Length: 370
Image (cartoon, rainbow, N blue to C red; front, side, top):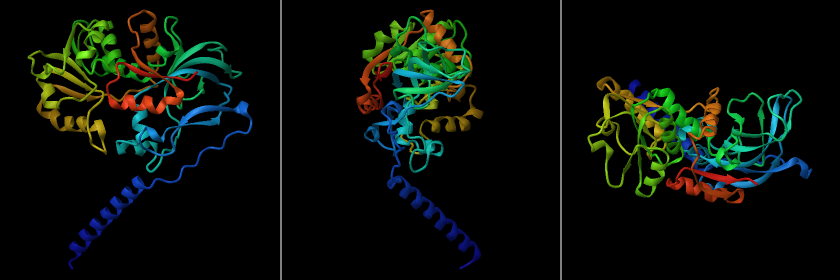
């Protein structure tokens, strides 16, 4: 055997071993190691946990230790939380790219949830921004629980708008910031520009339509037949029923397409763009087990040198300073109102996740904690 053949044989053998190890890791995750439960009932709270990746069946509601706020933190009694595809990806460990962050064989952080709204019930001794009794909303790790702690200056949490319920406010953080950054940051939308929101009746889409209108854009929303009136009620100037019409073949061109559902190829989107238009890729519909929705931006990199239009990926920054304040002001002024499809009690969080996973939610799915 020549040296070259020996090298190639060794490389192939190493690849086979790597694939076999990955397969073993996916099929046989390590045994879960639940955190100890305090003996004192006053130090316990209910929380949603998952000790292994999988379907909503892996979700459990268990007693965990109730957090204690540090000197610069607040303790919040959570009244409501909401679900996003973000939680589904971390629960299921898919695409596999998620596991590079969350843990390869099993989740490193077994708590779930981000969006929440609640009441401050305790403050650290150095806290001046909030007081006991204040209503707050935003994002916190492990928000699917009875209590969360947050730093006083955490930009992802702000005071409640006076005209919103806890359930409405709990539906905002991830979806609202994603929509705001899609409209404002990737391709700053200006008054009179033509914006199309593909997936206008979902969690991000319902916010994107309203935010784009607040910027003075001419907005077209794409949704199913049963959601046409909903999208109109949010302020869309035009609505397209995707079951009856393909907007990429209608002859209309848009300055910006905010793509939340990934229902068309990049080349098909080009037909619906102005020569200098942009597609902002927010979500996607792909079965790629490794990259998920990231496969479209990767294809866009290879397409970019040959076309005048732009294809950009949005990964929302939930810690961006002032974004939650902007969303609060939009709600307080009446320019943005959350859309809630269904409420579930905490005990039915697995059913809530299944409904979200089905992909037909109108607006947001809210979990009532108390």
